[in-house]
Length: 520
Ligand SMILES: [Zn+2]
Image (cartoon, rainbow, N blue to C red):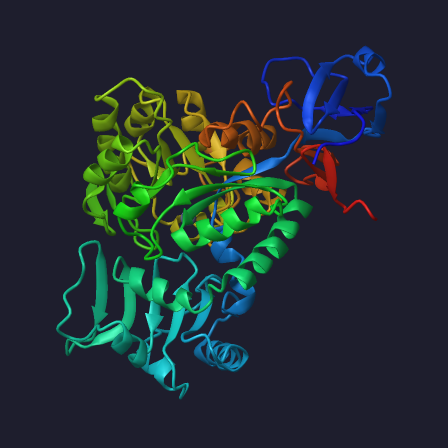
């Protein structure tokens, strides 16, 4: 809803996210949009303008989380939180409570397993069978790329000793050939979808989404790219948008409920990238080149070849099909072998026409200098996670390679690849002002990982705003404080100092203050 009278912000720093341009002294908002940016005199030119004194604080565009699993994160209050569990007793307690709390949901679901990083025991189906629950139980790994199910769960999924591994996945087996319950990557897709199905009542999902969005606003997030939006979640977002109830903007990234799969034909026939409005728009189709818990790596260590992980089949064909139907593409590529397949697939599409494809690589967690150059040549965008320095970096710091680099943020920037920032929440921490610290310091929590790949805190704020808007094809409507852009704004307290990062004082959406909420 537009503001009644124009507003002018002045009295502090205004970062428009246009590098190289001088910082303006004032910004005027009218009808929910940035109307003017310039020196103090512009305030006088707007009759009846209400002045918001920044009081020395910093005004920036609203943050855009370019890779955030919002529709799943919103459901977390309904599942057992296992992110702090370090042993089976702990985990069992949480799952028993969960079963009692959600008696009608079908599956008993827990999330965040191994997030704490110090889980040392082997978890298998007999541990979950021992809970004595008369229902299928699933423990989702924090990466959402694998999970453990109980024997009942395997039955429901029709997985037994005779079931072959799907391409791109593994049904872990014991020495006798029996499934242990651990389902890896594409072997996990159906377990994820089926255990989700009992929690998708649209009314409750709406309320959970709204509650979650209010939390995001409190940290300055005014737009989210939902990085794998199943059809049921797209429907819930559409309902909210139609009723004018979305408190922030969402860009959907269509993907089947059976996560990590190729695109569904039905969805490819539906609304393509770009359809919608500033509140809810269809973004790129989300595809996966390789694993998340098992990224596909093919590199060298001390002269020796090192290969690991899982690459998914069918990427080139899926990319071509989706592009032909009018979709832009966002491909998860964590390992350098996953990235190699992604770049090949993008190059094949690029050869067929000179459109602005705005190819997105999600993560680009491990890349060679040559791959970074290829992505630059394609005009591609890297959707990276500063928080992964702590999350992934602490797990891989002993794994140094001769020819590829972990999280090559500085290499990407110097090659001219636009960087979009994101959290990958709930797999990673989500607060932009907090996670940017790790991206600027390269501190994993134990050591500094590749300090030469650090980029400044100021550059991270650019990635969270202008960079993410560009990744979403929304650079003219958000992400920069330029005339015509939507007035999604954040006022920051403090300095852009990664050691003592600023905090969010106020968040504004479409020219209205929504945090703290207006009645406070
Ligand atoms: Zn993700």
